[in-house]
Length: 258
Image (cartoon, rainbow, N blue to C red; front, side, top):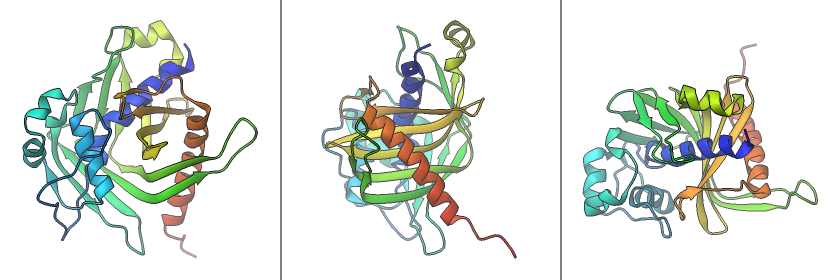
């Protein structure tokens, strides 16, 4: 099995996680604006609305009825199962902890992947009824060059979300798993990165398979498709985000008792 199959599935999670992560622009004491803006150049109307919340730095509780009102007739153009959402909430970072993003669904998450591989829906995205994420954000983020084949990469509007509680995973249908080999193992998602690269919104899922091997994939929200081939630049970004995630999580952890 070629590596792009693994990246394909993780890229799907990066895309599907947006309603559960990005749109969680909520805090106690904050309210969403009367009219929500949309991110320019994003094809799917749900993604455009949710990524627009990041662009505008909007805060407040987003419920499913509010989301449906904002979408209006455009909802029919979306392939996302957004009606599984109950409520999204986001808390600002404080001096003693990073930001917190929470999401609640109408039940335990279990939905078919709404994209195909070789004409088949390869499996499902599953998760707990509720998830909580730690959030870190940077207006600009520079991935340093790692050599002649690893150029410096500039990201804008980076949001890095680490799963703190709950579960989010890709479950592959058994027959497809058997057909394509161990390289298509089920993957537990540990974090999602959302950023603009060269003016385009990109979602990147980071996780591990059952053997503890790193997996990553990217989704282009402008083209509404998997990023394939997975470019060298994005490989460098994935590695750097893993390192940054470990560093920021360690810094956020309380010091051990003497």
